[in-house]
Length: 297
Image 1: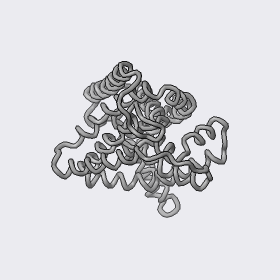
Image 2: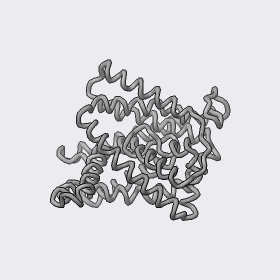
Image 3: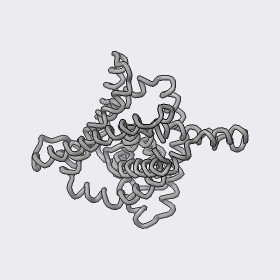
Image 4: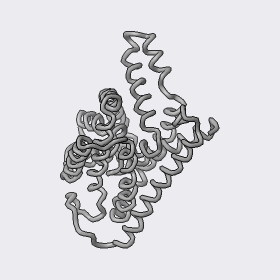
């Protein structure tokens, strides 16, 4: 794959991740897994965090950490993710609110198909992995069934929730947009972006940076030392989070039996699954064509 094509592909991957982060119930980390950049993203984020921490204590180590960051992947990803996130937040979210059944059905198919990614990365499933996945699935199922909280978006709360929600970027199965929705900050965040509320946006950004710096190193350690168990937990989180995307539910997140638009919902669910399967097949084909030493170009 040429350098230009590789950069364009990473911009497109970033765009998909950004769009996913704007949709409640869809995880940007899941999309990163599906598109094949997840481990590169985590590894580079870990080096970046270590480099920032070492700037004032060990300049040589800081430079070494920064050189280890895959800037050729990270910068195109950010170039696609940030503008798409803003556009999706302003345009896609109202569409989901206006047409919840068909949109949730489409997203349900996409996320359900994405289960195959972390599940197949677990090279051997044993009782321990099944147990981890089951506990994670139950936790995610319960979380996505909680009532939305109505809170005033005070800046300290914005900082705290941003620090929690950013974890969705590096933890497949957890939706950052859903966490904002659960804490009552999804609407205020969208309005802050729409009206360029700089105080809100700056506070949110600082919270996200702090949360990412604390969480990414822990996840990096888990992937290095408990690889199968960590991926099993990710699989369970995605499975349990499917509850948030069930097309028929009340405003209090109570699940209902299939009602209106059943036929359309089924078709859109299948289309969503087909899109994700297509992306995975294209990604596998691209990897087969690339050199084995460079899975992400």
